[in-house]
Image (cartoon, rainbow, N blue to C red):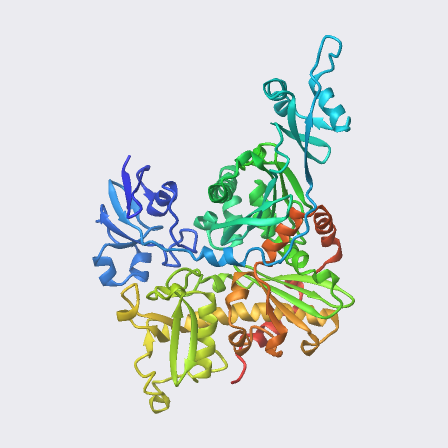
Length: 612
């Protein structure tokens, strides 16, 4: 079998002949950017063949790579098959997970009311006169005769008692003892809250006795190899048990990597983590639990379950205390998951008496509206444009991504994450770019680029060399090749603008449906909450300029950080809040947009940009 060496990561893997480079990289534990699940349509999985790349370019490679790139050894990882020993250079992309991490713990103080209880007892030694069984002796000391314990945990008890002078700590979850520990460990009680995003997974380590967040870690969701959106992943899972297992393995491995990092940061013992609470969209919750989500894709979009699910950590391979409890909070509907419930829980939207909307924009778009009379939610098919997918040089929020664009002094200025040379554009930069070009008059309200060829005299000297006709129509050069990190111009294309219009139109139309159903008007909204990393970093001014949000005073728009993750933390820290989370779905009215004819009307109206 041929060997593939990846540099500069210095990873080597042996694969079957005919394996794609994308799958070989996956086997080597490397993440390569790609949005199309290996179909060759996005053109983003670019790598450089140093050795073994003498095969003829595929049609997809000819489409997405320039002649210069092809001659330089650049290929698409999803298209190139390994037939002999090869050396491959994979560009290093540093995901800006620090953004996700800094947004964690947005709630100033969590309420400590742990579900897990730990009790230390010092038992009397058995004797000929007192032959009480070890477990019964312990339960008597605890004063809880009705507690149960599984043989796996019970097996460790006899030796532990005798080696530690009958000093033991029992960890109790519900009516069950889940572990025995020697001596007094009652002050060591931890849990992890997970936000399982389609794009990024975030984990927070909590001290359950104080409800304090003591460490946070994040990683890219490796299921991305099977597609950037949930439909692609559902399609992969639908192929069979093996494919479903692949998807579950990916997300569990990523969660375990986060747990490992949290333990490394804090020096906490793995078996002292007794609980995990997770949120995510409905598809992610199914895949996390290894449950087939096939029937979520076609109408009527029915999930296998919506209630909260509890399993033992060992049952799904999570590396904490083997008997630790893993709870995935309940979903609201097929495309409105526990991540949306987490937003409601963390922001206490259900307890508000004013008119408040929450928008969580990520790979999927979920909206919630609370009025005095109702609490409603919906999901819009916004697509992953806000995460950089379907955008010519779109990328996630990582070092080098254009994150801000401004029209100032009759010029277009860009800012990148970490202030390093640009290598692409992320969601916040995309919205800014459209807003700036609208302000400059280079994009019309219809979304069409200004036709500089018909009216060259109306184009400012600043833009004459930046507004041009490309392969797919008019485009604007945001960063010239000489200043970029990839050796080519970074541009905003006409298709990029159209993708943005579709995404923002879907979000706006979904909100209009909720507003209409509630019997209020846009002007009646007292506040809009923007949740998630995207909502936190997007410019409110630009969002208003392109018509992503209703035209409200800017002080009515508030970023609330990773509210979905905050919801998981709240539910992990407090039994009362977790009980509240279980009841919340019954209070939320789900609006299915696919059956609403007026959605199309709102959508078509919302596609255009507001007039400047």
